[in-house]
Image (cartoon, rainbow, N blue to C red):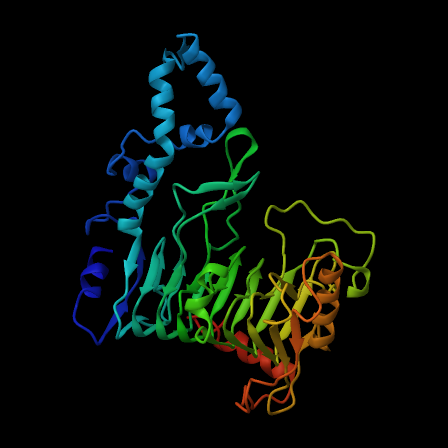
Length: 434
């Protein structure tokens, strides 16, 4: 990692080749590795303790400590008053410990840089435990690498028992333009890394996204990548407060990718224009169907996975989404359930709707689901009406049709869905397939 950091500081334009596997927690060129305690010890707050931090957010626990303070008593074998002071500092200290980890495991890529895996031989070219940051840059190409994001040593709990705010993506783009991510494998690891058992029934989730882009990022191509073994993979666009920065930008092409065991956000889209073309989606759906008309089998319960499959395409605030020639393969208890192809959020204003265009490519290849032709417009309408019935969307909050998408050719050259599937399996990922 020190050598990669030095290379990234060289003048642009430049091409940097990665030969072999680099680990984000490698501190020195002699291979010395850091762990979570190392980051704490080398932070501005070496007295931070992750268990105490989580306890400091527990009102019942804090009340018990306060009672011991009021009684001039002891806690954990020492002064309750002194312990209470330390407890109150944990939340602020957490950020300082997290910054120590970020200083080592996050790398900034300058504009005019190509970051490329050396080859396709037996030696893997990979960045493991690395957050590749594209911040206010232009013209960046990342290709032919496996990238595993860091596991956040210091995430913040949000919703009991397993929803946490972790910090690091495999790749993050902020106000970045003209970006091409091609031939990558983005994943947690060989298997989906599940949350780890922790205090009082909490399950610590240390992963964030695989590729997130926001704050007016634009002209991004995400092609021929494998996205797998993760639970919230691609997030494009910020929340409502960031709309002014994203509207009129956030133009993405998502082409020829293999989403395999990716539980959600394949991708989630806000405030931009997104072409989702000729991708392969593999999922295992054990969750109960959203509604009976979704071709699901009644009577089977969802499994108890912490990160069960949730959805593929998230059509959110004012997004304009074109889908064409995609292949969906699904197994599990509800293999034929199409109710989780799409999900929607913040479609509550008919005056600023989201838009969905379902268009076959130039060869006439439409979308397929488990080998059969599927009308994704019909599927999407059913899901939308279900959410309207729940009061989570309003009529007119989503409109269908291809007006506004222009006459741009979305793809072509495939005679069948089988050809699309074969193409993706052969071309996606740094090794030329699975």
